[in-house]
Length: 385
Image (cartoon, rainbow, N blue to C red):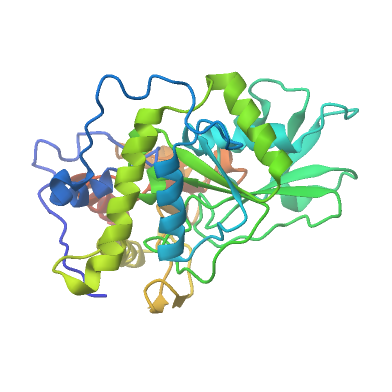
């Protein structure tokens, strides 16, 4: 795939947005995708008349009764186009982002009759929000139990498996693998702009989110693909109790966006212009190339190394290019987050991910201008400026 995109290099130390400006890359705010959606124009515009979406119900015959039929159809279509998930014979549960769906899944996999809360684990470095999600409400159903690699308690447990992993970008499998384990596979980044698609995921409970698929984080829409009917029912009940469903307006807009993505993939060879995933892959490839060039020019920082693999979507070998930088400070620097803050880069310390503070997570998904500022500052730090 040849890149047709270029980064706008307009920010230097003497620029109004130069080194005196704080750049906050703590969150994975996916504004990288704005350029593509501006180019798409009105293809994703929808008009919702005032009389529409009055009812709580979308399809009373569906287990997930607030799931919009159009949205469900486009979810199934997109997974078929990309080839990254099995949907046949599965139940789709829509949620207010994958965050709500994680809580719904924990609720659904827990037993109200258990003598103690079920343990929730994930292999470090794990997504930094998992511990607080599990413990924030001090539920009697489940409780955070830390790093899956160190988990040795007997009895039932729930393992959160994030693949590709947030923060380090590596592909993951379940770590504990004991008979009483239940698994939630968080595949928010299993899309071809981030990682080679090797085969359709085929798990009992899999989560995806619009925010990392297309960049529309503000829609607050995610979906679960669930094999077990009773688990799907319990997840639906959790969402019913907490928010009485999910915004129909957001689902309809998400359906339009997913349709545009699938259309762009199916029409790529018959018209001018790149598909959404080709466009996004090329931008990510260019950013990672620039990042590696800067990091490898010195010995202060190191990055994870990834092996290329065949991607069934692109029909060729591609290399992982994660949504986040898992940056390590080498030598006697023990607090990488503090070092970056001195240079007005806000990142998230490795300690939030169950890892050493020598690591930080930095978002790769911000605007071109912010990314160029990041590259400039990392280069300046390496050069001792």
